[in-house]
Image 1 (cartoon, helix red, strand yellow):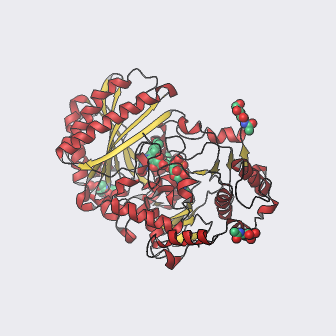
Image 2 (tube, protein in one colour):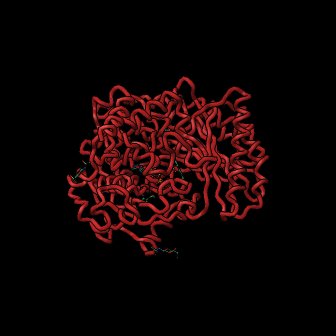
Image 3 (cartoon, helix red, strand yellow):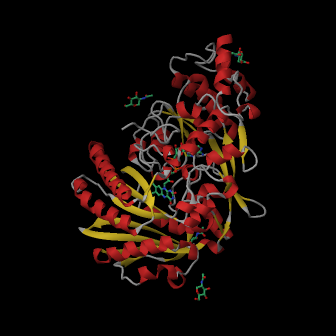
Length: 537
Ligand SMILES: Cc1cc2nc3c(=O)[nH]c(=O)nc-3n(C[C@H](O)[C@H](O)[C@H](O)COP(=O)(O)OP(=O)(O)OC[C@H]3O[C@@H](n4cnc5c(N)ncnc54)[C@H](O)[C@@H]3O)c2cc1C
Ligand SMILES: *[C@@H]1O[C@H](CO)[C@@H](O)[C@H](O)[C@H]1NC(C)=O
Ligand SMILES: *[C@@H]1O[C@H](CO)[C@@H](O)[C@H](O)[C@H]1NC(C)=O
Ligand SMILES: *[C@@H]1O[C@H](CO)[C@@H](O)[C@H](O)[C@H]1NC(C)=O
Ligand SMILES: *[C@@H]1O[C@H](CO)[C@@H](O)[C@H](O)[C@H]1NC(C)=O
């Protein structure tokens, strides 16, 4: 007993200088008595009584039964029920739908999330939370044999009285938010595609139509309501729990369960902006690269303008599908920054003025549900030479997947502009490790869908080869960059390591302070952890 206490004290003391100051979770933290404070008497729960929180033989059976006993059968879906099937099939990627948790829990309020975390600690049953369910790989927002938690009862979207902020709960996807904000002449730095979740996108960073002006999603959150590993609910802001606030800006699911995000709002009359896809033939490929490079380099001159370029093969034709968007209506007339694109004749053009809700729905229609999916990404310093090389490598390697059923590989370029990077230092900075003096960067991403599990390895090998070849060329050109964007990362990538050694150490210190028993590293095993990729490769 004494030895145990000494060990804990030693472990705590070794963390970081400030751990003791805040003493967030004492070494003698008692999960059972914390549950009691929340009105949960463990001795009365099926499968838990008399176990004292240790050695529960079937941890998840006990945990799921306890949740049913506490909250009723309507709050818990068991395997092979209709509700269970509807929930698991609602992930964007069918790879995530194939994961079978033992049960699905639907908390109704924040305290229920605290109880879930504590029950998981007591029983050692693993858990995962699902917001919009757009992460592509198995176990990112579900957990085999454990408890997957649905945020479907966390649907609040409330604009503050002074209209300067909006509180968004993670049961909303972005179009839910835009439907509320468009008619109020407001928007936020949210996702660009309708049914992407507010939770995952914001915790990984979050690139918006408005990011060149206002920064990434995480840089526009002024307060996180978060359930920590001890079940305690805190509001992390630039002044309250500032380290936790910093870590939540890009640190993913490693620091707590966020039950609401308070975003700064952006004025946008009727939610009207401009954007769409201009598609160019191969004869314009050189021009497309130069025009893309120009928009990223010149972004500070008109940060309303944003872009991505998708290199595709369709009907046997190599095509560049360029997404051009503008943070105001009438981009066709007013966005002179796109003049180099306008000088080339597209074979198709869907650009127009429209509200953010409608635009995000149009994006969803080109990203259908129910297929196997992989995202894989890297960054490089902005340089048209590497953009050309990357494009060419993708088309050289593409035949490797030509005969795979349903395979639709795309190479996508975006810019992490100087404007975006400058906003990352707002409110004490974020965890991503990006410095505007190194910018701008290109974000290069492979996205691919396909049909059959038998082809998984071939698809991963293709994506890896394209990325490895581009990385080698980037190094040769001296434009390599370590940063990996979490929200486009593959399960083979150690995303957090790319934030830089200083930030990795800082994140680990903060995790030890707020989660000394590493609950979010071990009991919530999915997605990008502080010390590893989701799977070893
Ligand atoms: C079609 C498509 C379009 C996209 N467009 C964009 C875009 O425009 N900009 C951009 O930046 N990214 C974009 N992404 C990437 C997107 O940000 C990631 O896929 C992100 O993980 C999706 O979030 P989600 O809530 O839907 O995912 P989920 O799979 O539900 O969650 C992802 C991870 O976050 C965790 N998590 C979610 N909510 C919480 C919470 N409240 N507290 C703690 N942990 C939580 C989950 O447990 C999981 O580990 C897009 C992805 C797709 C597939
Ligand atoms: C934890 O708290 C419970 C309930 O208050 C109590 O019965 C138990 O003895 C405590 N455990 C320890 C190790 O102190
Ligand atoms: C659900 O169905 C699967 C497949 O039929 C079966 O293996 C599993 O045991 C079932 N689970 C429950 C809880 O009935
Ligand atoms: C967005 O625009 C469409 C088309 O004009 C309109 O039908 C819809 O009501 C608008 N949505 C919102 C939320 O304002
Ligand atoms: C677009 O430009 C025209 C004139 O060039 C101007 O009158 C109009 O207000 C501009 N529109 C926007 C949305 O800025």
